[in-house]
Image 1 (cartoon, rainbow, N blue to C red):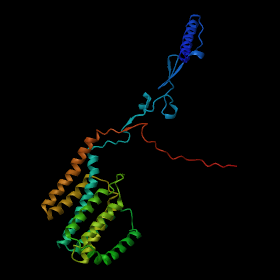
Image 2 (cartoon, rainbow, N blue to C red):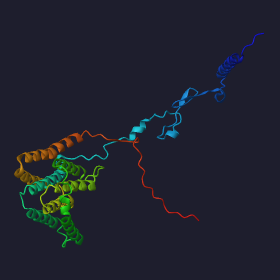
Image 3 (spheres, rainbow, N blue to C red):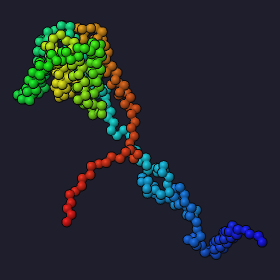
Length: 329
């Protein structure tokens, strides 16, 4: 007695019977696709009776059943946008923008020259104090001529600074005496570079930090105090530092950058530099040319190659939703 599996044989007989019935049904004009048609799932849709039925593709992963996860329709790139927020600048606008950096650089150089003049006794500290304070007061009157009287808070702040600065001058004179002069000069140079990098030039950027810029400049000024001769020299030097780094941004804020203001800053600083050292004046002019001519030129030139793309692949931005007040009885 032989034992065998009859399922394959029965399956073949069933397929033959179905094919025979379908062929006879077509010949007789009788077709019942609901009973004998097969459905095969395709990766982009459903194949029914040999035809591919595709559902419209949507930009929602959960509603695209049958599509692969990385599939995109032609309509996906219809939302592509290029350089939406790019502003094209002219060469003159770029030069004026770089002029703000040059103004701050000139102020730092003038501050360094004032320390050199006090340290080498090239100028009287009293004369330097009177001249710088008078200049700041005149600039304030010219820029804020609408104010008929000086604000009371400004007078209080100036009086408090004069008293505290004069009292603390002997302490600042001996604060960093034990540190070597080379370390003091190196630290001050680094702090001034930090001041220039993080200064607020009117551009909203992550790197901008007004407090860091001001504190770095004042820290560098305090480091230099121990190299001066007397406490009165220290008081004058700290007063100049506050005027250069704390008062000047407030005074120059209403002034818009222009070629006249830029040339005035560069001329005054160059004249002061050339009286100290021809090498220093040459380095200053080269730095100004690099900042105000080369950098704006290449900025405008390379700006034309900017190609930012925006589309549906960007991160979604959640807008503020205002919910109306409702009452529940």
